[in-house]
Image 1 (cartoon, helix red, strand yellow):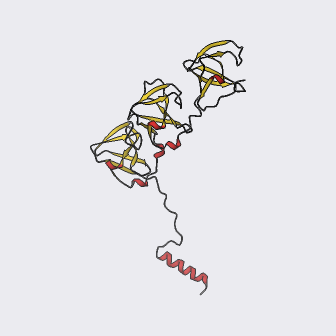
Image 2: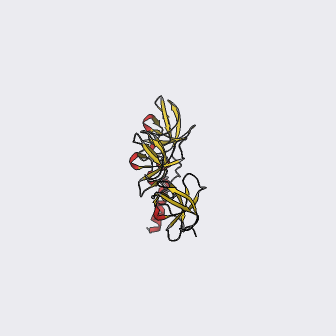
Image 3: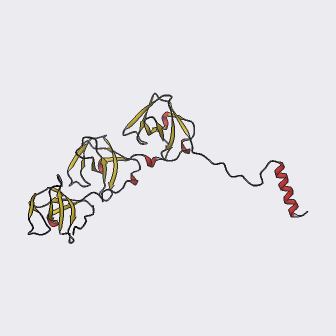
Length: 266
C-alpha cells in the first residue's frame, strides 16, 4: 500500500473518532475576575497595601467588591469600591477565585513614610543646613514624592497648615512603604542655596566688586541661587523670604547647599 493511501486512511479514521487532525487555536483568555466578600464586622479600605496611612472607607460584613490587582505575595487586594480604588487584606475576605491569578499592581500604590522619631525635623531642602519647615511626630505618615539618593534624603508632602507644601527628611527618621525604588531623584532638581559664611556680605547689582551694593547680607542668612557668572566666582541670588531682593554675591563668601544645576547668566 502506498504511503499516500496510508495517510488518507489515518486521517479518515481520526475524523471518524471526532479528533481534529490539527489542534485548534486556544480560546482567548479574558481578564481574571475575583470577587471578595467581607467576612468580618468592619474592614478598612487603605490607600496602599499596608496597614498604615489614610483609610478611604469601611466595608461591612457581607459586602462584595471586585478585585482588580494584588501585591507581590497576594496578601493584599486592590479593589474598586464606592470610595474609589483602594486595598484590603485577604485575611478578612472570602474570595471567589485565586488571588494569585490577578495582576501584580503593587507599583500603583502610593509610597509612604512612617516617622520613627518623637521629633523628626523636616527641612526646606535635602540638607541639615536648610531651614526647618515642620516637625513630625512618632507614627505620623506622609506621602513620599522624591529622593536625593546621594545624600539619603526623601521629599515628602506635608500636612495642611504647614509652612510649605513639601519638605525633606533624612532616611534615619522614617520607614518606607511601597515601591520606593521608582522614586525620581528630585534632589538634583531642587534649587541650590547660598548660606552667608562671613559676618557681612554685599549683594551687588553686577558681578564685580565696584558695582552698587543692593543689600548687606548677614551671617547665616539663606539666598536662592538663580545663576552664576561664567567663571563661577559670583552667584546671582534672591532672598529666601522674597524674590524682590535680587543681586550678585561672591561665591567664596558663601556655602553652597544642594546639588541642583546653576545656569550661567551672560
